[in-house]
Image 1: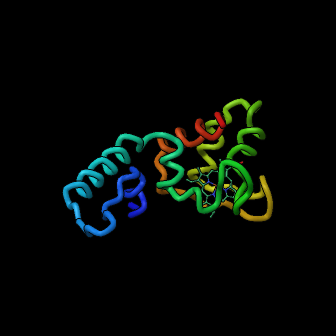
Image 2: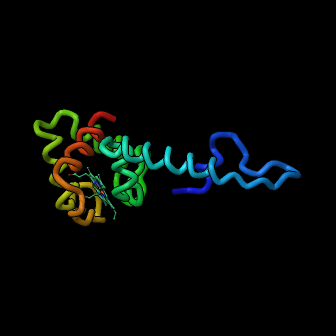
Image 3: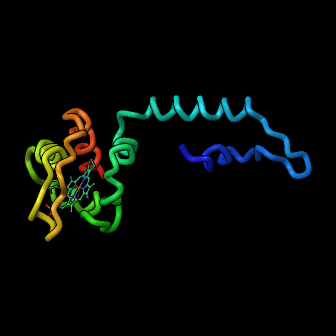
Length: 123
Ligand code: HEC
């Protein structure tokens, strides 16, 4: 969790001249953030962040791996594209995009791998 998020509601926790600390507001913000993170746990964008895909991928533009939009474009006419991509996400991939392989992301369960694959293909 980032401290910056606590300030993003536009409400400064410290006002000029008063140096007032408001623990109850901070607590409320933490609870809200935790709840939102939980509620969003099963969708593509939050999985991509929580599973660290963003260390190597961006939606647009290459990082270490191809962009998610490039992947979507390449597989848009493939039958069973979601199954293939889910298998790559779990088991890793090499030789399809360039010299750098993707290591297996074995910690991503099958359901999440499939959610990620469908999300990528829909970009
Ligand atoms: C260490 C860097 C790295 C991480 C972390 C990583 N990837 Fe990749 N990914 C790559 C590279 C490099 C390729 C290209 C591999 C190739 O050429 O076959 C790739 C390819 C892919 C592909 C295309 C596979 C194919 O069959 O064409 C998908 C889909 C993908 N990544 C999704 C993900 C998702 C989702 C995550 C997070 C769970 C993730 N990647 C995490 C580096 C990474």
